[in-house]
Length: 228
Image (cartoon, rainbow, N blue to C red; front, side, top):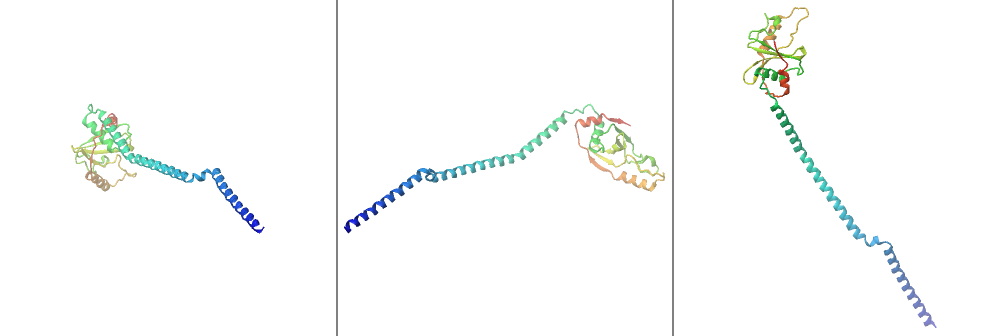
């Protein structure tokens, strides 16, 4: 009787273990079916890495294109600058000065380069011979011009003046003569001061090279010339 009892007990235990094992396997199979992402985890990981690498390559390509564009900008600026200079030269060549005298062209170019006020109504040309006093109101004490000179001035004091002598080589000697000399209100000017200041102006001339401007502004000045 005891042997039969033991046999039944062992058989029951063995069956129980078999059921437990079958249940565990079924549970794992169900979990796998419900969560397919677990099976594809490695594959998805590889895909994410590939997508990230592709994005990085695209960004690098865009950076290289941007760098290439920025490196070309100075060249474009230089090209634009050269184009503008060529247009200016073309405009100058289209201006015809053949119908004007060399003197008229000279006066206009000098005022264009040295004139204190570019917006003048008239351009007066005054010739002064050597020996003419710099300060005509005090000719007895004033220094005189050592050579023939030309004074260019406008209609107003604010237009200023340019007094010069030509050297025949594209340069001129500029005398810094004011349009109006300072006068004392009491009428008692310092004659020694007048003498010293005019002598200094006569000696301390400035040599200036006149550029050969050829444009519409030169013609405008020529048309405003009045010989005094």
